[in-house]
Amino acid sequence: MDIQSDMPIQLPVAGESGRPANDARVHLLGLTSPDLRRWMGEAGHSPYRADQILEWIYRHGVDDFAKMTNLSKALRDWLSEHAVILKSTVTRMSASADGTRKLLLTWPDGRSIETVWIPDTDRNTACVSSQVGCPVGCRFCASGLTGVERDLTTGEIVEQAARVRNLIGPEARLNNIVFMGMGEPLANYDNVIAAIRILNAPWGLNIGARKFTVSTVGLPKQIRRLADEELQLNLALSLHAPSDDLRKELIPWAVPIEDLLSACEYYFEKTGREITLEYTLLGNVNDKPRHADKLAQIAGRLRANVNLLRYNPVAGLPFERPDAQTTLTFQERLRDRGVNAHTRRSRGDDIDAACGQLRRAALSAGGA
Ligand code: SF4
Image 1 (tube, rainbow, N blue to C red):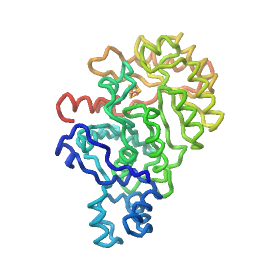
Image 2 (tube, protein in one colour):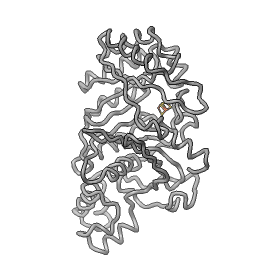
Image 3 (cartoon, helix red, strand yellow):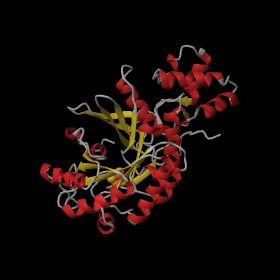
Image 4 (cartoon, rainbow, N blue to C red):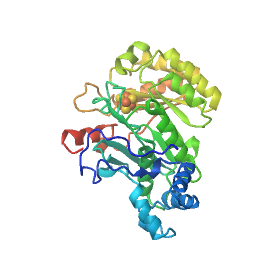
């Protein structure tokens, strides 16, 4: 049975998250419905109770066994002893004037990650992390500065969405999940896919597969594997540079663009889902007309949309945000070449919106 009990703890920081670091209770958010039924059955409880528990957790947003009023007191006590719903503690939350909220979640081992809720007129998006830190180390990114500490478990990924769902409240729905937080999701492949299946399940958060976006710097083998999952996920490729030389300078994990493109073509053939190219514009680095021309060729070959993002400067890193006119000129040049290009609105500029910045601020203040 694939139960996600707590991982061995490397650096216990007792009390930091408000829970004992060696808490070995089963994290229910990491279990599928069949796993939970089996676990309950093996412990001598009716598997039917599993359905009721899942309903409380995912339909009603309940994170306290005491509130599961259709379960017996004995079962609720047993659950409290052997299982846990939420494992993290919200150690910081910042709210932007545009409604974006950024959470710093701390796990029982003292590790912290970031999760963002981005409300919009017609949808609520959770931007979730897949690892603590990131192994890729993109030169312009705060998350990559300190490397990766560990993968997140399935339950820890699901919990981020559950936290956002609970913040939104019952009046609206969480309907969009983007894997654009800390970490390279395809480097924690199994846990990310397991979490997506839970969030997508009718007994889970029931979020449509087409409402998930997996953003990757591009691991060709994993992109092909993702294509074979028979899930209709959106794939966003963080290109950031249209040539191998420049890309290698910016992204230590860069593979030849040709390899990436053929993996993306395979993804499109298998899933029929359009690819999005993510391109962070770095002032005077990758924002020249020649870069736009090359990017247009790549987008044309993949029939991909292009999302441009103006860089959010990170203290201590030598990259600049391009001005608005340069960004517009770059976008228009792509459009003139037939590319569906948009400049993504930066959300939460006033709250250290660039990925990894809140955690970094907390780390340097000794707070997480
Ligand atoms: S930009 Fe993404 S892939 Fe690159 S270091 Fe940051 S989190 Fe990792």
